[in-house]
Figure 1 (cartoon, rainbow, N blue to C red):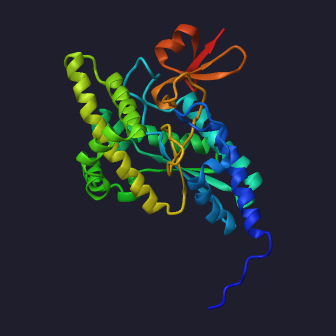
Figure 2 (cartoon, one colour):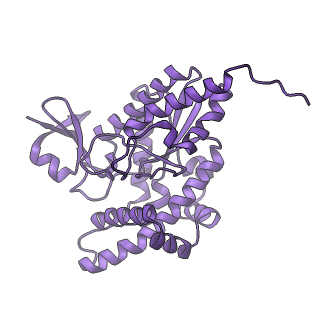
Figure 3 (tube, rainbow, N blue to C red):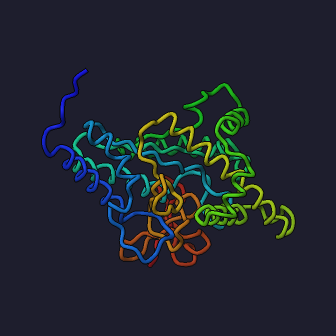
Length: 315
């Protein structure tokens, strides 16, 4: 079969569009790296992910695992449903897709891969709260007119008939790496060690104070952190199987050279912080920042939206 050669300059044009799209993402990169200026050519894996849809003149599809549920720690969040933090984060992601569409006319869409059911037994959040959060997330996307976003969760994979425990088992059995392999990576790979430490910190902070001594809660958090990492890898593999060729975003910090690109959703003093582990403080100048509830309520007054606590306003 004869192949039709690309017109002169086509390859250069694809490269230019890919670099421009990546340059749009770079100011929002979530990373622990310091002392380096980010330029598109420092991310060859991401340029390769963009090249296929750009060359084929197709929409760019981003997958973002996250938006699982609210933290069970009342010192961090306002409740178990999405609030101003999620609303602003979703509007940011939809706007990012709009900016990319200006560079790549076929456009871009974001698949929010809501992963609460994947981890609920490990993060100790009831599945009913996770259902309520994911349903409210879909409603929020619809009500805000965020047409470039969609939500994907375990219900889209396995339907409604199986129990949540059965669905988790299927994902783990098919896709999770062996525990000893993860332990080995944690000992020998700095980014993996940092990820393990970050997850352990979250799990310890969110564990119920009455659930044993502090040292017992720390041991439990370390043990569950490995389970979260196993399931996180499994969920990523499942997402890749259902959304082949997508650009892989992450809410965790990612080093250069990673196949995933870490992205910040909102300003926060902690590179690990997300809207579901915090709440929004709106400063007098209009700037919005993610803080733990205990910190935000010391600095501002509560604001309601549709009769529910939404965020805090300073001044």
